[in-house]
Length: 516
Ligand code: TXA
Ligand code: MG
Image (cartoon, rainbow, N blue to C red; front, top):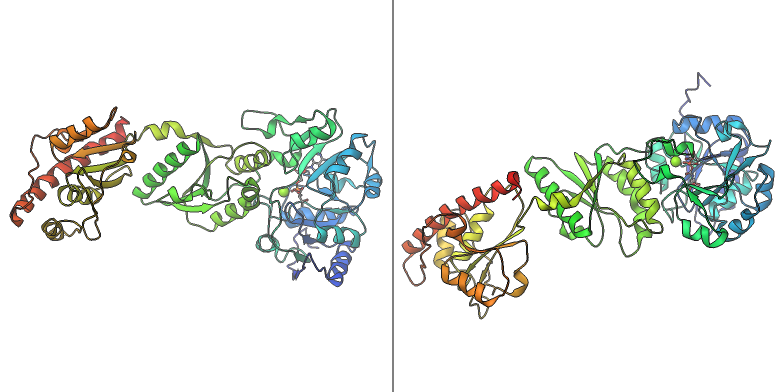
């Protein structure tokens, strides 16, 4: 050892099939641990960086490999209940029930430590965190190593916990002896930590074993307030929770509101960034990903099954570190069940930066603009095509509709010819009749003529936001109907509409600053 700087070493990477464990590999890994070396291995929560928990020197190596402060204690992983009695003392009676229900599994319990456990492992504390993982590779490894394996998450300090062997390799290749590759983990977030040295027991870190699950077994448990949000100025009780675990390279902001508001707000932020020539990242879900039109969208899982979100969270955060995005916006997740743990980790990654969606959503009055004409074949499609080519500082869905559309028709050929002369096209256009579904709160309907406006107003009760195009743009130029007239009439019509669309653009663009 040269001043604690570790010599580069060759990290052995071994695939292990959990359904058919190669005992030779486990034996080899167990021996490395017995000799004071480091082996990363899968658990059902995240990958752990294993060392012999009863060996002070091995603990030092663990801290060095992770680049982690050594006052941050390690969890001791065991494979049977006898092992618990060797490393913990004054074990409270509820422990048995909890172990019966949740071990092996994603629950870590804190007890007073026995003399067997070196302070190097507990970061100088008189207590020890103990977990019995359910992952079969982990269990076999613990047994092969002599029964006590300390294991923090196998990431470099300050990065998301690893959920695949590749993540471990990214962070620790050349710094540890071996990585056991057992594929992707099941849960994806670190274990629930429950402090058994206080009454009632206190949750120091939320995980897959939830408050409700624990209370069903032992009655009331308390929750360390500091894990819930940004408001508390007290230090968390689990030393590791005080570190801002992981800050993505790009600033991460959690957007809060109803799901609809969150999507609309993030869409607006992404469009604004796009106009500034910046690219933002978006953490979206199965249910919402299709609604985003700008930004780099990553689907984190399904809201129907929040386990999928827990499983993908860290991988998605790691992926964003590889991407050139200036900021990342995330939707929020319900704080129920494992959702507590999801939001806890996400908030830590965001450094507790949250914004509310509603005020952002309010800044945009209209989200869709429909140009309404009689047959949706000439003036309406021309107006829609022209507006699509404008520089709009908010994003709109721009459509055209007709009042009398009996069957879908392509655009009028003369209208198309005129648009072509302006480097635009109506190719592929097919007329569509206006329907009740088109009349949403955030839709602005602009008609070509007065008569069309009155027709809509009389047909649909309570309809708002219907104007003639010239009324809305405060210009009294009538838009002539060129139907059945020569090409020049279409040309004149095009000129008039162009002028009105420019005025419309100016008006729409004032909404952004003014927030009408
Ligand atoms: O799911 C997990 O728990 C994973 C896998 C590998 O088992 N391990 C894990 O370890 O997340 P680590 O070291 O990344 O996080 C352990 C957390 C830290 O926040 C640490 O401060 C806390 O547990 N901790 C450990 N011993 C403690 C003790 N005696 N008192 C209070 N907190 C303790
Ligand atoms: Mg960790």
